[in-house]
Length: 218
Image (cartoon, rainbow, N blue to C red; front, side, top):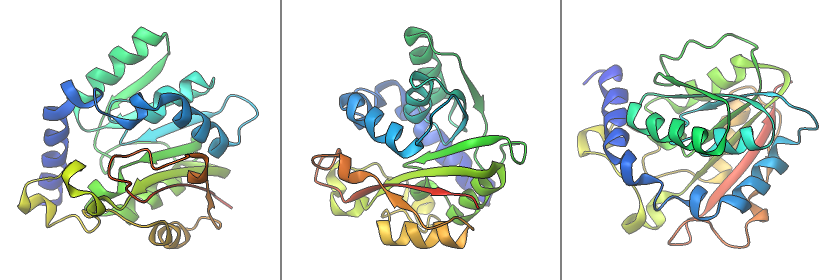
């Protein structure tokens, strides 16, 4: 199985789940608090260019649009993007959703003020490459906003992949805030700031330890 095979298997998995995904998703059930958390993490005083990598059904993209930003979302799962486009149309948001795996996405260097990756790193064979890509497409002073969790804590609630795909994903069990901070530093970002304290409790069933971190590009 090649790296491309892995990414396309992951995309196919999420396309299959797309029709029912938003029915149980945290960003839908707790949409207002997610909006408050991301607005705080963005720290934006004017409309900015936002790129949502691994956008899925548009969780971060739609929130960013609701905050007045110019938004592009990238994902390899066409089924997930179909849901995202329908949601954007229903809410009256002008968001560009592009079909592309994160690895294959052709995004101009220095074209974004904010890059978001929500629950994306655990799905990747090369998560550090994703953070380095985020760093490259940000303008100086721009920021990345990363959210993920330690999904192995509550396996009965988590998504998973076929064993041969899961074995290729180094963060398949999820990751801690500490590990994410280390990865952001390794990718060239300034020390990260945490925002998950704005949630009264974990937004995921099973009290999954999760984090929302923002870090700027020097």
